[in-house]
Length: 268
Image (cartoon, rainbow, N blue to C red; front, side, top):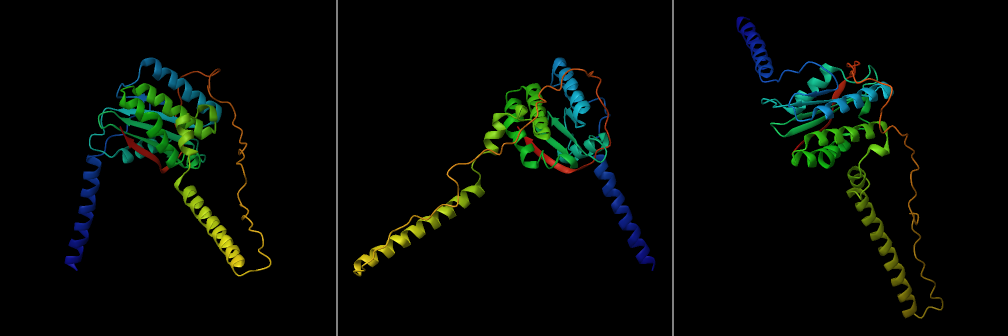
């Protein structure tokens, strides 16, 4: 009995030790000061102010809350854990809508992450977040132009989240609309079957001729089940490219949104 009690106490102490060690190496979440928190000082004052106005107007007009956080270093923390803790602490997005997103950049570690709230995961998917990081943000970062990379990344995040085609860069749409692997496999299977049927029909016709058949028949080309052309989906996008006018740049506070770990990470 005494041994069991000692064993249970040992487990509790071990768990407490794990919690203590984990918290000791966890970077503290910075206090909320507005939608643009450039702690690493990688943006110009003008970029910070214009982006603050832009994200404030986005919140006022759509209810979507996005924010930027740059830090000098993660200090050994994981960018996924730190980003999730920060987005959750700041409660970006409206309550029950969970329509928030956070862009975190660690200059010293050369890492970044887009954290996406539950309500935006259907639009700002993990794949699209990854595209924004790889195709939009990191090319600017590699050239040392952090401010432009952040601004362009946010604009594409907003474009995807609001379904505004005017804000989505061609570097995003070209890769997304490309011929993906699944489509390639389907095409290969289709044409393989097509030529197999054609070969069988020709072979049967040749045999009929060799056998002196009175009716050679007509070799018919199998009809494709695919149309001769692809039509546009016809989706229309509302014009919300500027989110300007009528609102001040004082920022906003978190609305009570929740996060579940959706998004993407990257390096440069």
